[in-house]
Image 1 (cartoon, helix red, strand yellow):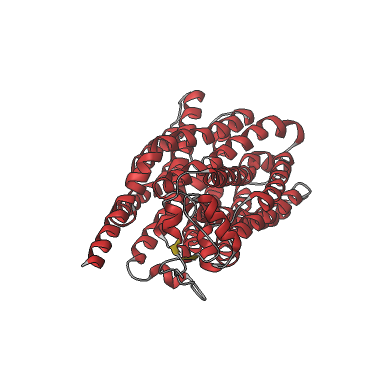
Image 2 (image 1 turned 45 degrees about the horizontal axis):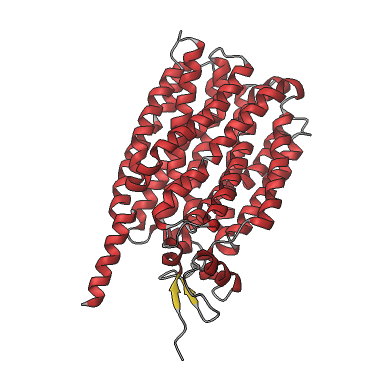
Length: 459
């Protein structure tokens, strides 16, 4: 009688040929991030109309935006834990439900404080989308397409930005700012239903947490039909003991602290610039002289620019990792400064804003596309959640500060100089992450280590 077959799950998944399961997960992840970008952008495009409707200072709107990102920060940590404890699918479904309900209630808000509290609650759900989705993608893609898969799915996020900009341009003038929140709530609720019936669980998570699950074997056989996966087959995750208790100390053990420190620095600095700029983009554009409709359309097209730039850096990202972000971050700095240049024509303001948002978005997506690769399965969702959380902390601080600066009538060019400055830190952090990625986490380095281990074992 032959011994039961033992298969290491990450190698099994990573070496599988591209198939229908991969495409299904990729498309569902892209849809999830589309709705995430759609709902996240609601308050950004509605901000000028909300300021006019409630007759408030821009500083008060800054608190609304900051409250939303505080909720997202909480959601990153809460759903990072949920994703590691109960599965990527459960984390994704509940995050959708948790942002759809408050978004619907915002349409009935009668004071700016009600909008702020409900946006905080919606933010908790929004914060859960990214860590669970990126963890699922990192654990489901073939090895040679890991970063590419994440980037393709992340195209959904700026596409969602385009979508909410279009909704704002066509519906806010007629139906008011509530229209964008209503659309976001319906989209989130429908997505939760789709995920319940169609979103598969991560095979790596199943192997680690439910190794005897028949679903694991059935899907593994479907993933690699040429392999013989029977009832006696045992899947395991090599050196992936489940972390018990607080996972934070694990992120700084051994050489892991280098990746964690660089990632947290990059996310924090990147959030100070990109997320703050995106949050206030519609208001900044109106301050620069654009009409509300022009501002909404510019916001919309800026989302598409993020996709275009990301397409060009997708394959370099697989090869050199975060080093690819250095060029996009530098161009973003130049475009940001140009937006605030006094006396430039409207078309140049729009073009510079689209470029600034596009290159910032591509940098943001690239970080999200590689962050999961720096952590093992047992802590991946938590690792992504904590890194994203650093960006969310910056996203709370940045919009509030800018709100006060706008209320204080700071010249637009000076405001944008301040906004662009943290991206210099992003450039330095991405250089460090890129070198670390090439040395330890790229496909080439992983394959080299595997050959070395094989030779050592043979000796």
